[in-house]
Image (cartoon, rainbow, N blue to C red; front, side):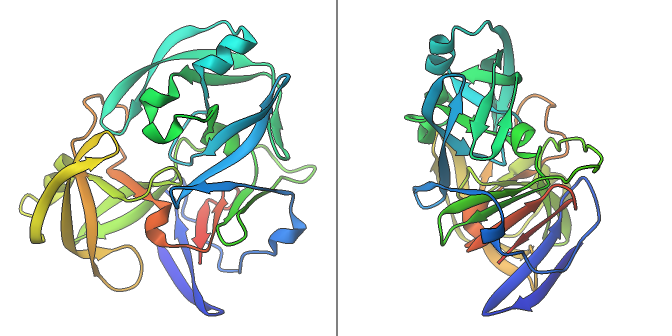
Length: 286
């Protein structure tokens, strides 16, 4: 399921996601050969790019691989006079009311679409980090390219698109990575919009009724989410087992995420560059 190899002065890691088992071992290609845009890095991990919807230019979007769908803020929907219908989505441990709408088009750098269905919400209620942004780009849009590259050193995001004649693929609902905790396998969503490692406590206890921790547990919060901070020994993401700081939280009440055991914030990988390979069904980082 995992493969690591030496790459320059660091380690290039290649990990399958839940939708497939194919792994390629070649290095990430030179990003200068692909269309790219610069992004603003907020809070040390959040990727924010500028985009356009209809005639509204200079909109700010969070690039969030942990979001299955693309969101726009209600104030943007109001300006566009969009028709909407009610719905809901799951945000970590709770259901959040939203609305559905169709935007005439949406563009972020070379990534663009015509009429496109999005969720509409008060983004300040969705996440405190989204207070002054206009939207969140999710996997339904990001997955339309073959590959997505994020370079945290150069602060650029780039895309690789399918060539002519290539067959169309279905867009993944979420990226997950296999993580083993004290011998018990779990699947965590790879989330560029999250900073830490979060696990649903009941799903961990399901396989490990008496899981081990080190030191004292600390009650607190990650944003608006109530969590317990613990140190878990015997965690294997790649290479040998380690003692890893994990935030435990209650799972959602709904059954919308039965195959997801938590979230792995990309910031916890301390990656310089990361590649989401939608066509090859793999993820790489260094």
